[in-house]
Image (cartoon, rainbow, N blue to C red):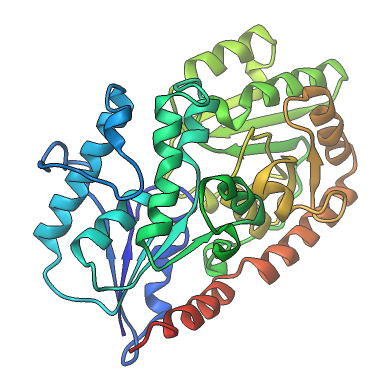
Length: 374
């Protein structure tokens, strides 16, 4: 069976999709399986041309928006690159981005296309203050969900909560399946260690949607309570300078280390003690599963896919979003009680291995793919 995994970002980019898809190839071996990966290189810009039409809505109603114009041009570029680079036929295409799925169905109309939706671009833009809810961009991006439902052969997403989010924008939400991301356990190597001072870590893109302002406020509260800790922030993004200035104003800059972007944070994440990320929204939150597999205690906000990964008090701690005091309370519990922290970490690791192993996802995908085997 000839399979194509159609990504948007190159597979070496950080994020949930890239943490799973490149590791699938070694699990889909010949003679029955033949798998390729495809993505749009960063250097491809403004190459595509020609009219773009969608079957379920008229995108020209939104074209005065520069964000919509850029999105449609990226779709043209993906089409151009697909037609240039892919000459062979496939038995099945699995797309992991709306642009990828719509482009593949345009170029290969007779080939079954499975569409997985891993996150919400419009929700990220709203939370990051770049677009308005119900504005042109929001309405354009949410219209794409019904277009994907109309054009592709099967739709999947990564969590129950994200399927609920998609429901108002499609005709038959009950037909959307759920396949959580999976992780290759061999990538994660927990290291026994004893840190005299609790080491907190977060890994994310530095954007408002991740709630790092709330985390810094919570850490300021911890310091006012006389608790010792070090906060390690791994990642980069447009609000890094703003966060560094906030840490200085709150008097916790000495306790906070900004690393910038790191390609493989899982290589040194096991040396920390507590993973914390108070996101304002997450479709799945792959980094929580990755941190659990590194045997870190988890503290996260009770939103989206995070709340589906963490059973509060059993394999991690959940707190309401936008609440630095409740976050500080949760962090204090795992800072002052190493034994409790260890139990949460052990339970979190067991849960992640049982629910989010790559083997489990591969098994589900093989069953799915064989439904299209001619």
